[in-house]
Image (tube, rainbow, N blue to C red):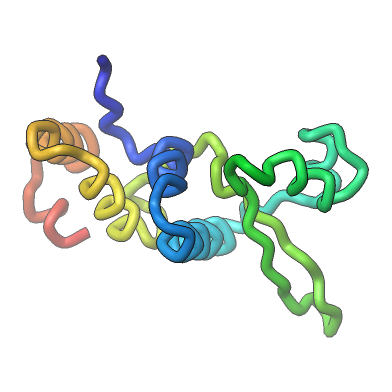
Length: 139
């Protein structure tokens, strides 16, 4: 088995989905916050097209016993409330340049067993921080 040492949003979401509803909802909120800071929302039309459905109710009915992959929030745009959607299971690698990186780094660490923690930390230190422990510590 190949160990995934990147901070893959998709893989993090799979594991977090297995936790309690309260924990998963908190996690989805953190993902939505990070994606909103990057202006990476998805339109309702894109979601409907992806699932080949006519309404969001049909989309959520389709995944009723599965995983809720979308997070909905409302934002005020030019005085009007607008619904904004985020794909919390998107194929995205979280980098050290992303806001909330430290939070997702911690999520990844809690997913790993003790036997893999050293491999993960070594990979991150050498691949992302050029072996500079001070940069890793201060990020």
